Length: 447
Image (cartoon, rainbow, N blue to C red):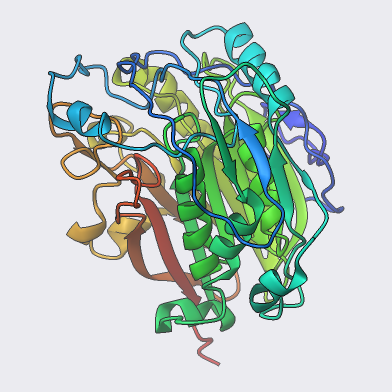
């Protein structure tokens, strides 16, 4: 039975709206439970290191407690890694310690991850600070009138095993804005045309290792491509706040305010938000949901969706239940809208076949482009060793689905590229997932 559209502050689990109006504001609060089924990583030794990054700008003192790394995005066949290999390499690293509170639950209980998030949130903030040396920032700020003010990230003194002094905000701003207006390739410049660019990325916010360097790497990529729409999974609250305080040229939507969650970022000068919605999965054991944004791009109505479907092979049935719900909402979206879903689906190919393939009128974007081998595997432990899994696993977890509008110009994908495949100086990748950069273009009218 059709239901009226949800307000921006309402969460749903029923049938999708046929139409809507209004302007989005806040989103409904949704508690997010810690990941279950992911096995605990072996504790790593951390070496205290003082970042030698001093300029005339104000420095912020950052302290952090030594923590154990915990459960991550791993298949059920994960085993304890053998000695040697990357474990030995890690003991030689001078780690950049976390400036963000990365909550990594050690158990499946909601209480554990909620308490962890609250404790770290009390220690770490991403708040406004005063600019002390404008000359140091002039080269960045003059590149755009929209350059946001410098943000300070600091904590009060606590009992810690080591202390780092870093100019966190300056380097985050520099990472994001540094490549925004220079050295843009032809693909990057398409974002200023009638091409629609979408980035979809599970950023692995639960991983506590080398958080600052990985965050800088993420901001560098997001600033380099300046995609019209960014669909993110595994965000955590303080990471979300720091992205939001840095990327002032985007409008942010979040799937929850607790634990880890999804987010949709819309470029303000290209995409106008009309409405938003959060759809609950009624039987999820991981507090997963579907985040939806109704928007206008160059005067054309679009609907963007993102989700992080239930993890682990053993949860296949729940994952397929969630996938059916995603397809239902895509199918029943307003017919004048083009619908794009992007997310960490955790799908295996046999699971899609079990459902009889995609519904009529719905397409897998990677398949539409001819199944290019270079962009097939978005979770590839044969290359990406962030999780230190002792055997090679290659899966296409991250996928884009497209439902064309029933009327008007048709949106077609032009190319798909995996991003974030270069190691950072800290010897880590930005995430254990590769990001997907996809370019679309509306077909020219035959008239």
